[in-house]
Length: 88
Image 1 (tube, one colour):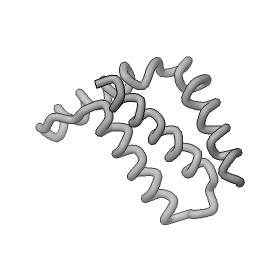
Image 2 (tube, one colour; image 1 turned 90 degrees about the vertical axis):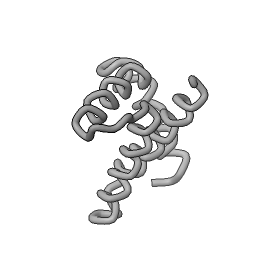
Image 3 (tube, one colour; image 1 turned 45 degrees about the vertical axis):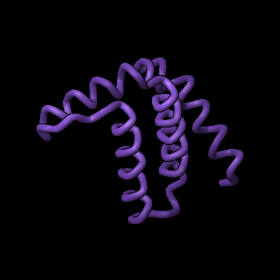
Image 4 (cartoon, one colour; image 1 turned 180 degrees about the vertical axis):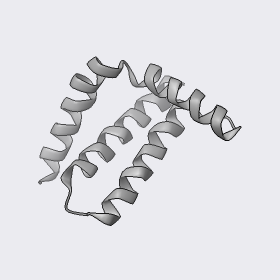
């Protein structure tokens, strides 16, 4: 998959289907941050959630580096992290 295709697919996902299904990254990742933070007993930000999801996708790509969706998801989560950083 060429890089333009990865970025285009990530853009469609994070600004379309996922946003429609789960709401904005701020709202969705805030909920996840609260749950993870409560479970772990530490404070986690929405941006932390996005970055931790990038790490999850990196771990998965180590197992199967030919599964293109991992790279698409990494790009999408990185974009969300950038947006969440600007929102602060």
